[in-house]
Image 1: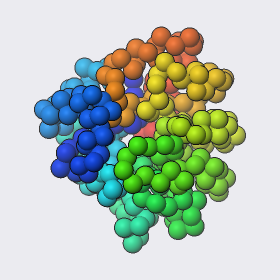
Image 2: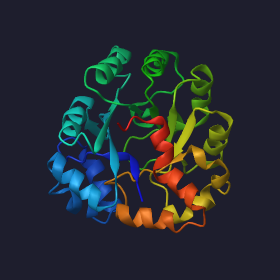
Image 3: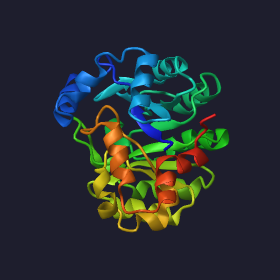
Image 4: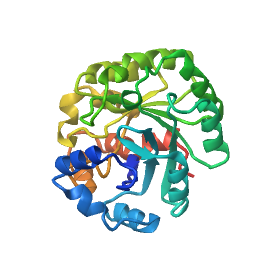
Length: 275
């Protein structure tokens, strides 16, 4: 089975807040530290993820001083080491970058990054603030997807009020040609709200990152009726199970084979440049 993972982190202890590292160790029963200790080159990281069953992986930058400073330039350079496997996504922080839309343009056109990840709950802004619209204008013009952290988080300093899915409604309305991916599917409070928005707007998708794979049909009872809008993400290394176990759990869900294929790679292939 082909599997495209749309939500992978480059785990380098030098870039992560110590409190984040400690929480990751707790979430994963110390597996995160053990698994990533020797994955210090692009080839080692790619080889490990391939053995876990992945065909391609998107590596996400995150400009979040409270949690993670894996900056876009670092991710772009890292992914160049295994460019046939890794897909780099950039990130900007409107509270630090004086002209974040110009940075997005640079990351995509000059560094070859293929999407954008935004984390409102870590960086403290509402996704539909007017100052963010210049970023979406650039992303829409460059035809790149924009991912939003949508849902709860246990990381220190998180303000969950900023990642209510309702704020994505404005963006989808005002930028109908912008591909929007809601990461974590509204985890915690907002599963039904996220699901409804994905059915209402043609340009909104959901990744299932961080959700218990065996419970996906409990969280989204009508998931298969809207399966064209779902994508697979592991959140590696912040997952308590190995990636191959997560994939196996999805393959065992009571869904049609073609639905599983759409979830595991076909939907991502439609809206993300994997060339």
